[in-house]
Image (cartoon, rainbow, N blue to C red; front, side, top):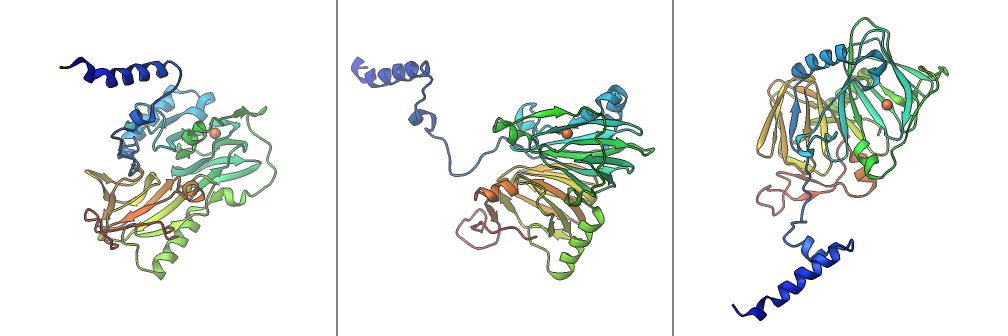
Length: 338
Ligand SMILES: [Fe+2]
């Protein structure tokens, strides 16, 4: 081959090597062949089965001391993140166990936490002086930088799902944490207001929605809690018996916890079958459809609140018209039903 023909490539390679050492990169190389037409999250469809996790949690209860009870959490690590503590690109999720008589000492941090009680009564979370008694399927919010501690005054273990915006706060380099001088903070007599959303009230709101309108073809009936914080949104879905949802995808990756009933969710080429208290992840922009033969109720959390604030949220639904043959549907940016 004529030697001259390789000169441009050689010059380019030498240039790329040289600038690499100068903390510079070539966009025309880094983006060559990369499909930027749609998001591609590393998160994968995943499910954690409660009847498998619960024995592990009880084992952790024997291994981890009461002093470390606030860390006695089994983190739900999405396999797409190589062992990092992420359930989705922006959210952390874990199952926490507090045994009878235990106290998780008071602290605060710059991440916001949502707790959804899965099992047990008798625990209290105190947030900024308000003692909030927790019952199954209650939602408790600890907004960023609020003091919080937990105590189980009952005689049974209490388990809840923790969802925090930790990966997001990490990405912003804004993680702070502080330990309170006292193990339990003083009570102020505050009722906590919007820091707790009772299971009964949320369920009544969902039932009211179900009594007034037909179910959404993709999501069933859906109640959206008042946004617990600027980053996360939380939902309660009800799928009627015989529900065969239409495919949908949305940019907010979601964590679901099954409240009651059984069903399955198709996630692109995977199918997850779920039953009460299983937790599964629908990654962002992952085509999925829910179905349930006998009906089910699902609790869900995602970063929808932040995506809406940034004007980034998108959704695509099958069967809504448009030119996309794969979907027989177009894209829409409408706000999901409440
Ligand atoms: Fe905390």
